[in-house]
Image (tube, rainbow, N blue to C red):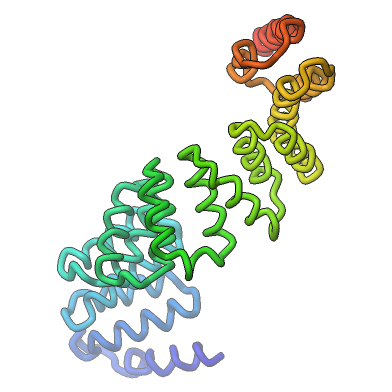
Length: 302
C-alpha cells in the first residue's frame, strides 16, 4: 500500500497535466516513477520510465544500472550485462556496476569476463571478502585452482567460517591433489550432510591410499542419497576401493556388479579397473566379463 501511494503521488503530475511537453516532467521524476514501478514488480512500466530517465545526464547512470537490474530479474542476462558494462565505459571504477557486471557474466557463462571484473573490483575494494569468494569461485570454474586458493587464503579469517566457502576451499585443494583437502572436507562434513560431497571426500581419501576410511565414507554416502545415478557412482567407487583394500574378498566384485545392474554405465571407469594396481588376477577376469556385459547392454540400447 505504501508503494502504491508513493506511485500515485509521483504519477500525479502526469495525470493532471494535459497536453504538456516532455519537459514538463523532470528526468528525476521519470526516474522516481520508474523505481516505484520497479518496487511494485511492474517491470514493463518500470523499464519504460527508466528508459526515458536515462536520456538525461543527471539520471543516466542510475537509470542504466536499474535497467540492468530489471533485465537481470527477467533473466535477460546479456542485456543486463550490456547495461552494467556501458556504465563502466564511462565510469571505470563504479563499484556497483563492476559487481553487477561480474555476477551477470557468470550467468551468461562468460567466466573469463567475470574474472576480469572481479579482479578490478578487488583492486578497488580489497577488503571485501564476499567479492573475494566470488572471484575465487570464478577462478575455480576456469580451472585456475592455485589462484582460487590464494584468494581464499587471503580472506581466510572472514571467509572460512562460512559453509559454502569451506566447501570451495576443499574442492580447490582437491583439484590440486593436495592432502590438505582431506581435512578441509572433514571439517565441512562435520557440520553438513551431502552425499556428493561425501563421495568427493572418499575420492580424496582413496587417492591418498586411506582405503578403509574411503570405504566407510562411501557406505555412509549411500545412506544419504536416493538419487539413482549418484547411488550407482558411489556404489561402483565402493566396489573399486574394496577390490584394492581386500584382494581376497568378494564384496568388491559384488558392489561393482550391483552398481552396473543398477544402471551404472561408465565404461571408461570400468576399464580403468583393469590396469589398477592391487586387484587380484581372478577379479580382473571377472571385471572383464562385467565390461563385456556393459558393452552388450550399450549396443542393445543403441
